[in-house]
Amino acid sequence: MRILITNDDGIEAEGLDVLYQIASTIAGEENVWIVAPASEQSGVGHCISYSCPVQVIKHSERRYSVTGSPADCVLAGLFDVMKDNRPDIVLSGVNRGNNAADNTLYSGTIGACMEAVLHHVKSIALSQYYGPKNRDLLDTFEASRSTGVEVVRKLIEEAPWHDGPYELFYNVNFPPCSIAEVKGAKAVTQGWRENVEFSVEPYVQNAKRFLFIKGGPQDQPTMPGTDVHANLNGYVSVTPMRVDLTAHEKMGQLQEIFD
Image 1 (cartoon, rainbow, N blue to C red):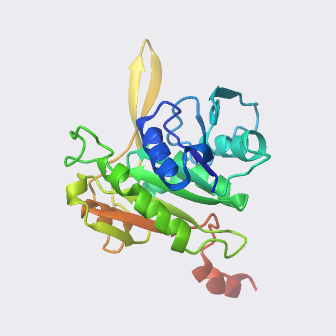
Image 2: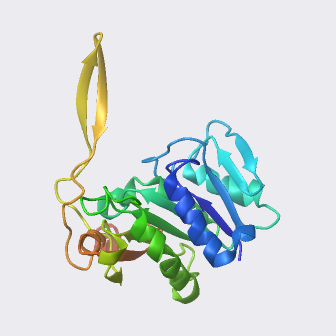
């Protein structure tokens, strides 16, 4: 098995090293390629550098960076770095911070997975939730480092994959706690956090007006059976996703209006 790993925190991110350990345990170091952003790319979603070229930089054997987004990295991996030996799966992460609930929509970690499945390559996004129970640990990635192999292996070997034109990918979030407090893994839906939407904070300096983009509190729970609720209660959340954004359940009603 050949694995391509990427992230949105950049080539030097600690979480990328965690993901490399996970991937190497599953496939062996000789079967793991890194193609990650040259700099921080958090919050860029499924952005691609359509209007300008990106540079591919080789750091060592099977380790590259790209001056672009996570989706750019996947494209570089599929059509340049690994063009003669394409990966069997793309792993994206391990993100420093959760990509659950509404965060999913902004995530470059998720964006990389979306690009992979558009090319019919399996993909899994992995993110480490942060909170008061793990942010002061010596290893803040303890939960993902310790449980990541088992979760990824189960998904690769047992989960449904290629089942339609808009294929499945998986969003995994590890709970904000130590490994001793992890209770297991749960299959859940994407949740919704009330009152945590992004906003702006104005700042004026030398008569110039700037806006800082601000997020909301990440400890706001979601409904039972959803990702954040599982994470805040000590569970690894696993959510199946598709790139298809159609609200299929509303098609009948809309057809009555227009047909």
